[in-house]
Length: 435
Image (tube, rainbow, N blue to C red):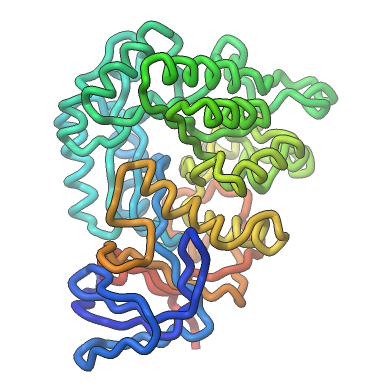
């Protein structure tokens, strides 16, 4: 899609939603920036968009997405991933380094950044590897990766098992001013198994992952962050035990932030059983229990869980058609994230709309160190999302933007339709309505 440039415009009569609440307002945009927010704004030269009855959000920031490039462009590339992101209201993506090759060198990180700019639909930031080739043995050059645009580092997909090396990583990360993102998984406990250890896994005799496989590593990394004074971000939190650790760490003043994902807030291990062990419900860490989901929702309301990240993980159709235990982990999440959260959390009263927008926009922008995005306010970048919350849509392959369609939401009806996304004041997605 060619982005349409708007030098100056006013979005009128929108319900503007920020982390701190919502209000009726006009938004004046000029040269990719927000100039003013208020009622009755006048600017004769500006093009006007009437958003009466619609909600306007800050562009969503995804701290955790897999764009499969370089190496698996058959599953996703920067163009298809950017289109999917824009359709889902995302304007900033952080792409994880478990690629082929890994993003472990300055040159690879520069290439990712420049390729994202070339596509130009969203801002793409590379997440650099903590260790070379993500093998957990030798630290990468943190300062060089930071210079190439890596604000965060992670060996996502694998946990760094060596505690001494993780301590050194915290110490070097402070010098390089990068944030460490921890994939919390004790591989000796998880053993690559397919689902959460529960009565369901026992009933069917499926080798499973105990929730402590996540919380043990979370506890270790929180302790190391506290000891070194470093910054830590926990990826894809899925268990109540980890939430308890986060609450304790925050109370103790540890510099730790955390994310969860839409699928952990919507589905449980019971949904795996109800689906007949459909591999579209297979994720890592595995879906938890109803108690885990309740703890995650409460932590999101409280701000203990700062962000919702998609962990967008596209896979080919043939891979996901394998039996449940053989299929790869991962859900394709960019296009459904907002609507899934609005349908299953806001409309059910589990969270408010500003809380969801905080977790998708303001909080991840703050975690990543941005001061120019994540809010609709003067001086901020004009990354914006216009949605009609009165409408529903059905998830279909025909209207899918990603190369892969491995989503448990396929054929489901979701509430909240994203009609338009602006990236730096340019339209990067606009709903095409028939008739």
